Length: 414
Image (tube, rainbow, N blue to C red; front, side, top):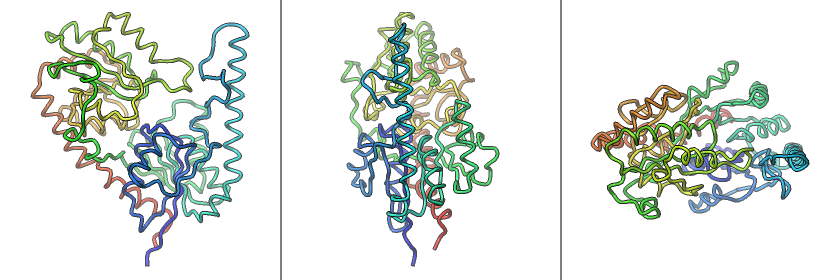
């Protein structure tokens, strides 16, 4: 008789960003006869709301000591934005550092008291979803000598955090490192025996253009003849939205069709010192593109936005590990324009499901935009191929099955 393995999933992404969405689908398609999931999160938010809506909000543990980000503000005046000038700047920095220190203490407290959770729930393996989860989970695994699986969804950009992660990766309790792309796996050259590449998954029926009602054209009074070129994601510098705006500006100048709107969906997280969204709005104004651009801000659900897009742009200017936004767009039968970097080349088939340019080349992105604006048939052909590629390669049920197999291998099949 096969025994049921108890798995503690640790997830700090409560706003239902990429890591949260990916974990949601793993939990949705796990075989409950083989795996009994427990989920540790900082608090109830969009992620847990989705679990409730799906009827899989079982064994969810909320613990505010597990901060969604170590830069989470703890004081009213600590907003994550560093003020300029004199004592005000000093006071803001002081509060910011104090918040980080208190968050670290909370995380340490969570690790120290983890035996009550791990032993009490008879957890067989700790599954870490996200950067902070990797750190907390590895330390909890060490404190309880419990096997740990990391699901690595990013490429570390800072040396300090990178050194910490790579050091923890060598711990004997970290049994498996699941990477979302080959590009992501390259950052662990000394842990090859633990590595496995499993791409992100999506349920094509959840991202189905045939069953989704659009909101962008309605909310902004756009006609069906308007070509909507959009992007969704966190508005941060490395995502390359400035390159998107500059490419769009040049494309508009050259295009015969001026009935085009560019839509950016998302906001800048609180823990970034500068609001990049404000910078982008100012850039659009400086380039005289206000009539062509729409900034919607953060949306809990991007599907009604994708429904009204004709073209999707992923302008990441760094090796983006494996952006979920790309397979979400492809599932909506949208052709994808992006740069040939990171995990994007593992999701988009250049010339078949989209058009990829050399990294940072606004000229090539501009030409790709112009080509798809002018050719409706090509948009449809690439979009159809993209949705089929998602069904064949990135279907969430198949991805969850592969994740489950890794869990069972680590815990030891009965």
